[in-house]
Length: 386
Image 1 (cartoon, rainbow, N blue to C red):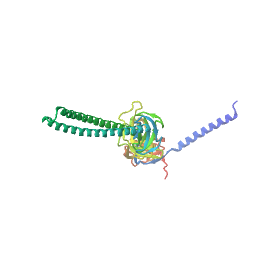
Image 2 (tube, one colour; image 1 turned 30 degrees about the horizontal axis):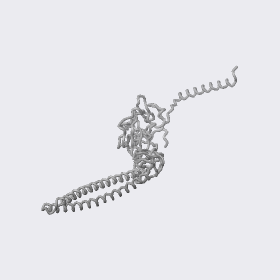
Image 3 (tube, rainbow, N blue to C red; image 1 turned 60 degrees about the horizontal axis):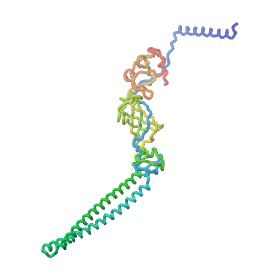
């Protein structure tokens, strides 16, 4: 047995259906037509900008990995993040030993310079003795030729002259040797001073300490990087861009905007990789930012790249309907009915789509709301607010 409430519900539904059908028949007999409510607007001049947004990284493009030029224990004078000035001492290496080497070389130079001065005195004495021996020999040679001096006496002066010559030659050799020692020790002193200078590393320019590779007191060897310094004023944005846009990005021409929160910096594409990465199908673009840009090395930023920009005629983006075959169309209101107009579209930006055949829509009231409920020839009711 069926429940009474079920029977009541069924009867109500049948009654409702009958009433609805009766109402439709009455409307049809009365000739009532339902019009689609729409809103319209006209095409207007707009500035169009075709942009893509990618993520990029801020890089300091002037940086230096400062390496040790001496061997020994290191004394760091700066720390991570320190602001530094050109000529400021960054770190020292083995200062005591190197300073001792300089002091020893300076002392050794004094000793050999004194020996050189002594050799100069010795050669002066030898030269005087040689001149005296030469005069004695010449005087006695004349006397010997006149038979006024015996052979034995003449031979004595002859031997004395020969001895004076050899003494002079020996003094000359000693002077040359002393001079060579002075040059050698002077060179050793210069090397010691150079080693001491190399063990004192100074900042090549104003910047910041971006990284520290060794700690204070560590033993380091020549060529080992100790710290990295950056010039925070010299920044660039680097990003990867889809290969689809390879021909559209022009170095020195294409404008970009680098954004980080509320900071926006305008620049241009300065360099693009000449090749496309075969794995990621991307290429690298770099843009050098103005000096003093309020960004930091390593920041992740948004990069808006303007691929095209021009003035044109536009309609609200939603007014354009994509048709079969990839064609686009808009609807205009003509004598109370929807009129389909085929259009060619260009750039879409800021909610408007560029119409490349503006003559087709010029001066027409285009449907911008309700267009998805009409077909070509549908009657419409324009409800624009006054």
